Length: 262
Ligand code: ADP
Ligand code: MG
Image 1 (tube, protein in one colour):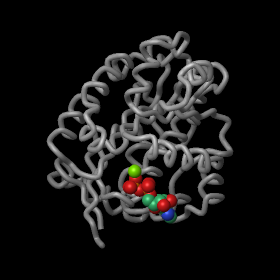
Image 2 (cartoon, helix red, strand yellow):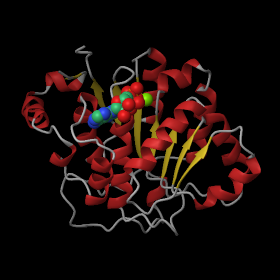
Image 3 (cartoon, protein in one colour):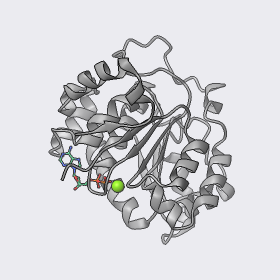
């Protein structure tokens, strides 16, 4: 049904881990916050798709993830759920902590769709969420940006704001998502994404002064209290340029590829 590639196949312990993962079928089998679980069930999401079953446990554990699965396989929830859970588990303060999660997506249309999923599933959380997609007045976006906890953005417009918008503080960013990475590269965003990564700084940059994590918090052990910024990269295909982007942006990632069973 699904298959992990690279290191997993060679690791004898991995097959036990795979047996455990196969038993995780529904979202409610995971140690998710009741806030997220309510958002999922209110949105009629109960059973996980294969990419969700394969990717979400690793993302919850704080790992960087490279997930490849065909269009329509449910990649959006595979990052929306871990994103909400991470902000929840680090007790991210919606009023004080600024931007906590950033989702980069190639087109305005995809940004709208992702934003809708985020709004529905995240409806019981207190985090604010916004779109940065160009087209709208950049002035209006600029005023609202410093108040947003989660942004869904297209690369060009986001970079513009990183360069130009005062008080747009990304120093406590907890989760970076590169969605539809193959399409972002196809559309010529490689250099823009490099520039964004430069602006965001090193993945461990947030740890220095951010008083976010309750060290030794007594949440379920599946949740990482690692302070490092987590990056989740999803793609429909695994091209060479996606691999190159992954090498630049991911730290010791778990590679997950879901084979098409249809
Ligand atoms: P992808 O990004 O892989 O192309 P999407 O995240 O856009 O796929 O999901 C494709 C469709 O599947 C959407 O209509 C979404 O609502 C639906 N979907 C995703 N996950 C689930 C799930 N766990 N249960 C039911 N429907 C789902
Ligand atoms: Mg998608």
